Amino acid sequence: MHTDLATVGAQRTIAAVFPRPVPGRHPGDEPATHPGMARHCGKDEEIFAEGDAASHYFRVVSGVVRSCKILSDGRRQIDAFHVTGEMFGIERGDEHRFSAEAVGDVTVVSFRRCSLELLAESNRPLACQIVSTALINLERAQQHMILLGRKSAIERVASFLLDTADRVATDTIDLPMSRTDIADYLGLTIETVSRTLTQLERDLVIAVPAMRRSIVLRNKAALRRLSE
Amino acid sequence: MHTDLATVGAQRTIAAVFPRPVPGRHPGDEPATHPGMARHCGKDEEIFAEGDAASHYFRVVSGVVRSCKILSDGRRQIDAFHVTGEMFGIERGDEHRFSAEAVGDVTVVSFRRCSLELLAESNRPLACQIVSTALINLERAQQHMILLGRKSAIERVASFLLDTADRVATDTIDLPMSRTDIADYLGLTIETVSRTLTQLERDLVIAVPAMRRSIVLRNKAALRRLSE
DNA sequence: CGCTACTTTGATCATACTCAAGCCGAGTGG
DNA sequence: CCACTCGGCTTGAGTATGATCAAAGTAGCG
Image 1 (cartoon, rainbow over the protein chains, first blue to last red):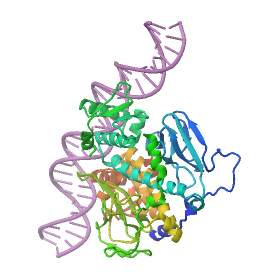
Image 2 (image 1 turned 60 degrees about the horizontal axis):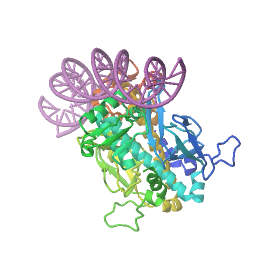
Image 3 (image 1 turned 120 degrees about the vertical axis):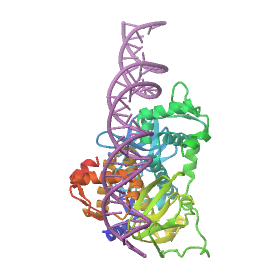
Image 4 (image 1 turned 90 degrees about the horizontal axis):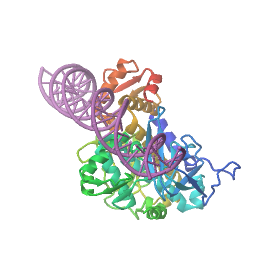
């Protein structure tokens, strides 16, 4: 019944948002209290898994992190790539709803999760960042939904290239992730991504140097047109 | 450069999240300060448009609201449906990044948006709700991305029926939205939605009474299997 | 009754997937 | 130094899923 939903929603408090104010240091914990200690991860190493207790959240110090969900039969959807300076792993409930993995070599810092109320009082800038990050991730997710739900393969790839170029603010992109990662991010297969890139290359919209891991945007206007 | 991104991210404050602490009542404003005055909307009426100044956020009092984005050629993606008690229209920047429309007859209350810092001090429960809502919307968006990116038509429809049944907590769903809305939410065409529903009906997984606007889930286990 | 809006159904088509093979650079060992 | 393998990427041929185009059914309403 609708009224029930209303009541449930209205009764949530900030304590419910981050419901685990950990009383003290626990013996088995990762070394990650306030200032956040660094952790290095190699390629494809898992930072946390879907279903893990969401006892920490994270910030990327260097490298790129992917967060993804996997269906029972192995189909994978990458929700987002997180680059240097971005936070990830922020949850409302008490477990992570997606897994996070290192795309290449990565350094992250983790923060012990605690009541947002306490956090807001003791460390307001960090609390702000957390809220801000959640809203940024929401905006990106909303933008990504229209890509996944309504755009064609070329439009998806073009959008991806433009977004990535915007984030690094250059016209030459050094893609840190594999074709498989790109495919799972764009909701396509690796073959379709590859074919689309070669088509864009044939049409002189992009150039893909020998190693195939960097991409030069030669005609951004055309890309913008193609991305709808 | 990555370091730039890091700096930008780190410098955001709560003031930047809700950057418009409106000093006083403005003459042209909607009557919507703190307790939030009600507004009624008829079917398909726009509550706010993409690009509108995000001066208020909203809560659904009755009815269902859809929030969506539209591509230049008219393709539409519905981000989410918001039912009674849920909040929507929460933004980080200063304009709405999607439009919100009434699915049927709807009553909403709007809240003047103000600095989250002020809000946290003056009205903590509301601040909590806002943050909580943002995180809930993020979770839903993440869940929806795997549907849009990786699921087949039957899986999408089955997931949609199960989710909707969960939200109303019954096995008979009175769908408030049209087939077109469902299609635009699931990233399908109206024809595919219709065909899929009749297929599920043929297979005795659901029943669709004459008016075609309510759906009875006859075999939830089968639906769960079909939704992957 | 006949309009309109919405939905269903049918036939055909296109886009992206699947399966399969080949290519290329890097690393390894003879 | 060359032959080999391995992983990631590209290319090709055939197919399937869902889109498109078109028409017919159905309920609501004047």
